[in-house]
Image (cartoon, rainbow, N blue to C red; front, side, top):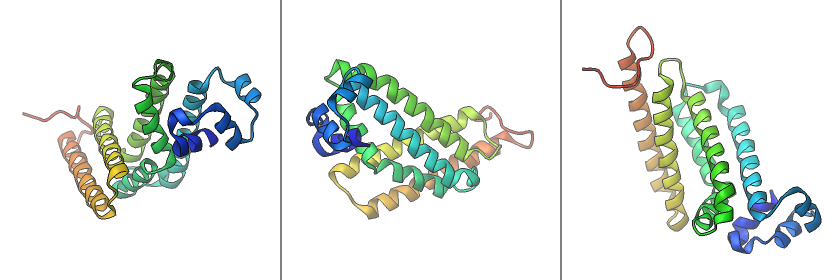
Length: 195
């Protein structure tokens, strides 16, 4: 998508409407007709591209739900090292000091966050875990992956990333096992430790 490409290439402030129009092939008039301003254009592009990535992930991994923690983590990791993630990081930093961007980015990020959590719950759910516990494990996983991706911007190291992914996989498996054991034979518990 041209908007994301422009942000990755030029940063938020350098991704002018003119540059976005040049990359996309749309006229500035067409942009103005569909979007109030650049902030709105960017937030719509971010949500649409995230939805596309999620659909691809579901298509690839939907059949392995609850069975393939490694595959889930690797797919999510790949989604964190894309131009979409680079653009999202650029936008988060720009929104810190741009009220107009923050006003449209926060709801877009909330929508994307809900979608990512739902995807992760769907992919990790094997029917033995309470939804709340899967949500907690999902949030921890996503935050760890985001931290790894942020670290990669300044210091890419594939060996470190593989090591961290293995450690994250082990952590997720441990958390899932502990939750399933706590649930007992009657099904999922509430995810809290027993006495």
